[in-house]
Amino acid sequence: MTSTYPEPNLRISEFSDGWKLRKIGQITERIKSYNISHKLEVKQDTGVKSLHYGEIHRGYLNRIKNFDSLPNVVDDDYACLKKGDVIVADASEDLPGLGESCFIAQEPQNEKVVAGLHTLVLRPSENLDPDFLFAYLKTIQFKRYIYQVATGLKVYSLAPTALTNFKLRVPSLAEQKAVTKPLTLIQDEIELNYSRKAAYEKLRSDFISNAIINNRTIAKKKLKNYIHYKKKTIFPNKIKDRQYYEFSMPAFDEDGKPALKSGKKMRSTRFILDEPCILFNKLNVYKKRIWNLHHIPENSVSSAEFLPIICENINQDYLFEILRSDYLTSQVIALSIGSSNSQKRLHPSDLLQISIPMPDLAEQAQLVEIISCFNDSINEIDQKIKKLISLRDFLLKNTFI
Image 1: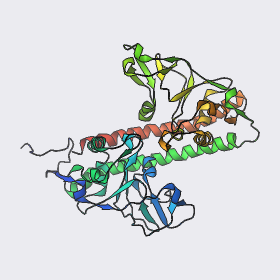
Image 2: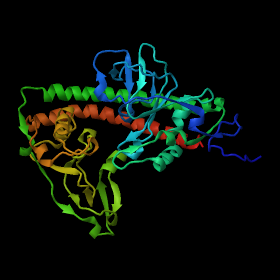
Image 3: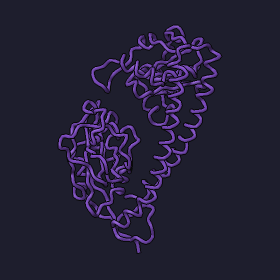
């Protein structure tokens, strides 16, 4: 007999009851969050941990079982979070980041955890599994809804009423748990690999700091003596029938690969890329949008938000590692100017004035060879994470309505 109610594409055969349509506000309780920013954080252990939207956007918080990495704040009679609470980011500089979430997967024992700046907290009712709600907030259904209700231009916001008015289909509690069990196992494996990746990234960072940045035997010299900017430009819109490989911020953020676009869709000047170079993004430099390009496709261009750097008497791979190091990032952040934190830019001439450690070319090559070992391990882990995320997204698409 054909079902008269919607069903997911993949469903466990033992379940047959309909999925009921409910607003989030009907099956959760709103818990208070606070305007606790990073300015209120303290170094000493206070027994109170704060979780704000920045931690969620960094991507390493999902099913939170350990609270050691969260910053300390001084208690002010805050309402504390409990196991099962789902925390949603209600602000983001980009739409994909709006509505990202995490949840408390283990009851805090020796600390009090509170929700900080730009967060909305949902406490599921007894008939709603927290894992199910957390997973649902990652589905395409929820993401499409977020795109419809988001407000703002430079910074996007999600109103509390918009979140609680979202309608989702909910099966029985038993089916909720059955649906989310494989997703939980996959997510745990993803987080384990993220931890491994972070460990290798720290090893790489420590090596660069100890062997290069803090090595007093290596003289520091200004970048202006070793690089120049490529200035050849094109207006692709004038050749509308030509296809271009465009290196842009959206392309970098999506998958790190250039997007194939028609010239008629590009309505401003682009830099021509026809030789090996490094693309250094001058907007919001803390995001480290940096491309190291050795083999460039024909008809490649970059947006004007990137600085095309041509190397002279410096190993390009060595320069790339220095440019994305914490040492240089802290300097370009300090030099960036703008009307708001989300729109700060680095002036091209300021980058040229920065001094970096400059060993001879032979030593640069040796250092790059060592760093590449860390990079290979990190890239291998990245591939595992991508496969796991692909599997997770397949289940999110096919096991929810």
